[in-house]
Image 1: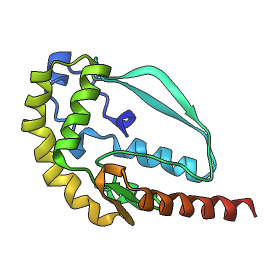
Image 2: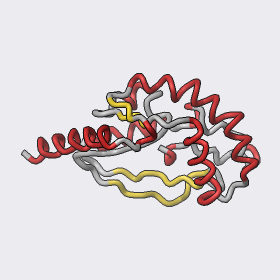
Image 3: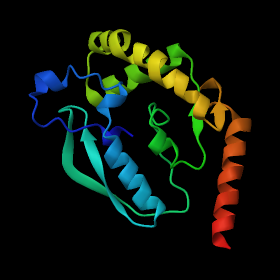
Length: 172
């Protein structure tokens, strides 16, 4: 879902860095809904690519062809009803707060070159409060909740079995 952050080209980078990217208002829901609908209708889409250093959409796009199974991930995915309704199977991967923080630190240092202090400041000011306000309550819309941060072979096996059924039904 990161590809669907709003593109604040009119703002200088200093202001873009201050945006609360963990709030649902940071998502271009109309574009996400439109592109998911296009995929469901059998059309290809040109998915945006987001540049996390500049906090803008890259000029590059990724062509995504339609498929019998489309997987989209994002912590805010179940917040927006219109998008939620486009999902046939909704899976919520439930991870402890300390695991979420460790993953974020590792990702942001390795992939985004962010300093630890900045990551921790963002986590305390926006990430954790937004998780409690939006992400945690949205898990009630999930069809399946996978505990232990996805390290759950039984739950994953059930999801894989459901996808196989979907693919077998489409092949007939």
